[in-house]
Image 1 (cartoon, helix red, strand yellow):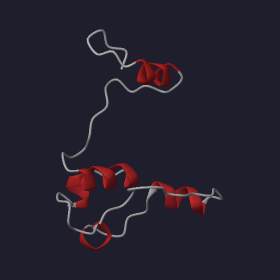
Image 2 (cartoon, rainbow, N blue to C red):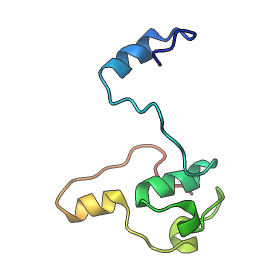
Image 3 (cartoon, rainbow, N blue to C red):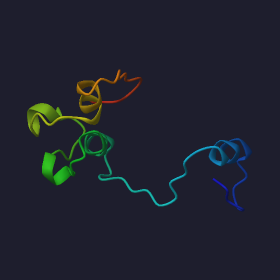
Image 4 (tube, one colour):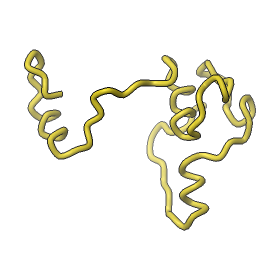
Length: 86
């Protein structure tokens, strides 16, 4: 994205009209713990979720999520695609 070495005009055009995070990090190398961390605001060492197979609400606790918080405060929330897994 906006790189001299890689030519990606469509991505560059999208980035020019978007919020671009050039220094972003994942909480965990596996997607499920990282996604749970993003949606709950809690680190994987707090949720004790490190793998792809554990269901986080059973394994780690019934934490509130960002979508739940918004819904409880009058917003309509929707999820599309891979949001929680498994």
